[in-house]
Image (cartoon, rainbow, N blue to C red; front, side, top):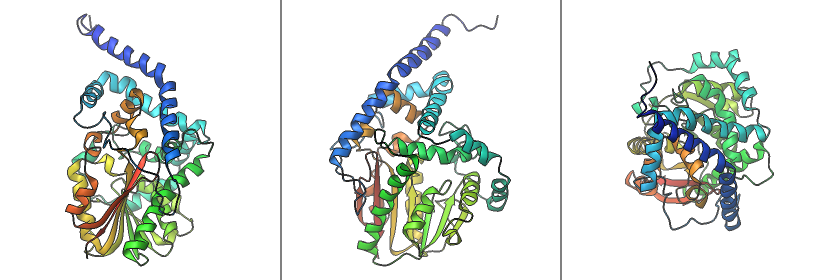
Length: 376
């Protein structure tokens, strides 16, 4: 009494054990293959140059595991299996990130515990939270292996080590520290932004808005690259913003930075009041309609000639396209809008929203930076 029927139990358990066995057996080989792909890209790339460019992309426009391709549908079917997702994919995705961090000197668990027990973080939350914010439906979905998405303390206190883990995985064979990987990742982005501003804007920005700023790492790097500019870090998660504000306290330039709980699609800022709108690793978390809304709002608040910039996974990257099955399945299982992100024409959408001088820079082996200027 209470046992699953013999007709359903073997199928479910066979699927679970098959996925677990194949994933564990191939993970080491998968990482090695990913690293070899990374080396091939690196040999073709110029990383950290004046514009932050990193070579050229292949003709293939997206990975086969995203969009409407058969492989994508097979992966989606596996992810939709709750037993596979909850029992294997979600914990394995977390474990992969944590192991990458801790093997490279990032004390993931210690950092999370420290921030979780810090009274100043909770005080910052009380100061920042805007109870009138209405969360869009897409933001209330589980993602990044958190049932509550970014609207929880676990996501907020783990965001910093997760970001360092992500940076380390861009250059898996380079003998670099987590700090060096993070700096290399961010400098390539701010370098591309600086080159575009110098060429097409021609003056120093007064106000920069970092939409979807999370715990403020991107915000601080952009602020350092533009030391005379006022920075606004805007995010839908008051938990993330509380960590950002706590980490920023007393840091050089913190007097120029403000943390705001709000929607990137409805910033409440005045028309033509901002010089740069940045979205760093945000759009892959959004459905297509939200991406268009973010661009539309950016066009509204930007001054004529103002700059829109985003950085995120590069659909044309050979590293991304050649991720082995275990890795791309784990990655896709924590990102519910992957199919839309990898098929959106970001450049075309920017032009439709009123931007010109639109171009893409392949800023590292895995990521692209897309920039445009609002038509005057």
